[in-house]
Length: 276
Image (cartoon, rainbow, N blue to C red; front, side, top):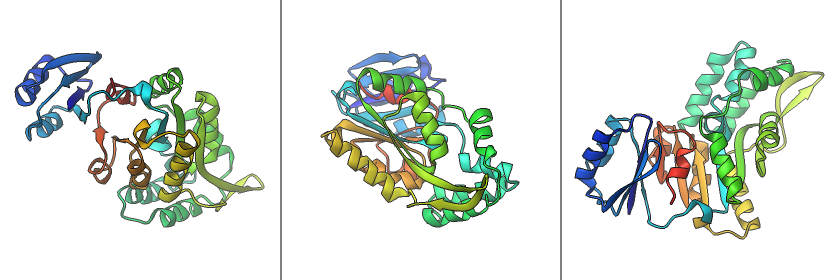
C-alpha cells in the first residue's frame, strides 16, 4: 500500500516522523504540500500523528490512476460549495439558527433526513424567491480546489455527478457554470413569487443519491472501481458505499469513520493527490 499525506502545513519534520513509522520504500512529491510514501507499512502511530499535526492521510492501493476513473460524484452544500444553502435561506427568513440546528442534527444522522428537510423547508414559507438569486450572487462560493478537480475530470473524461439534498435553483446554475454532467436535487415550490414551504416531487435523500449514482455508473458501463464519491453528511453514506473510493470531505465523524479516507484540511484538489 501507498500512504498519501497532504496538508497546508505539512513540512520536512512531519515527513521524517512519518517515515520512521511507515518505513516507505520512497517518498515521492505529488503536489505542493502532498507526498506519496510508497510501499509503506501500517503503524498505529500514523493516524494520531497526522491528526495532531493537521495532516490528511490515506492508504491507497498501488496503481490507482485518476485517468482510469469514469465517474466522480460529490455532494453540493459544504462540499462543492462552502455554504449550506438552506441555512442561508433561513437567514433571509430570519430563522437561520433554527434551520442550522436541524441541518446539523441531520448531518450527524440524529434526525431522519426527509423529516428534517420538510421541517426546514416549511420554515421558509412566504420567503420572497429573490432570496435564492441573492444567495447565488452574494454568498455562494466554490470550495478551494473545486475548479482544479473538475478541470482534471474534464481532461481525463471523468464524468461529474452533483448530488444534493439542496435545491435545483443552485445545482442547475453550478451545472451550467462548471460544465457538470449530471445533477439531482430537490425542487422548491414557488407561488406568486414566494416560497410555499413545500417541495415539488420526490425528496432527494440518501437512497435517491445512491440510486442516481448507480444509474449513471450503469449508463457509463463503468465498474465500481472506476468511481469516486465525495460527501460530508450522513445522507451521503449510501452513495459513498457504492463507490470504489469514498472521500469524507471535512465531514462529520460518522462519515469519516466509514469512508475510504478523509480530507479534513486539504482542498477538493486533494482528491487528485490520492491517485497516481
